[in-house]
Image: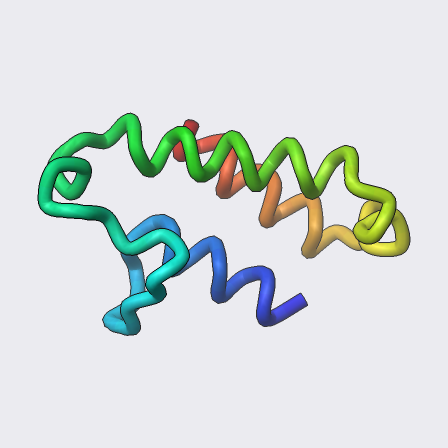
Amino acid sequence: MEKLREVVREIKGETERANPLWEPTPQTRSDPSYYRALSRMLQNELKTDPEFETLRDDPRFEDILRQLAAES
């Protein structure tokens, strides 16, 4: 669960660590819709992907979804 929280923090720009998967280009860095789109995509995957089925009843998982929803 902590790794998932770390991903959310990275997407929200709350960490110093750059991740090439979602590191913005100079064109998208100043565009807030870039981060909103990432948040929406991750929310959708977390809610629908069978791989996350076992986590869906965990209150921490719900907290992560709320954090992502606040970004989108």
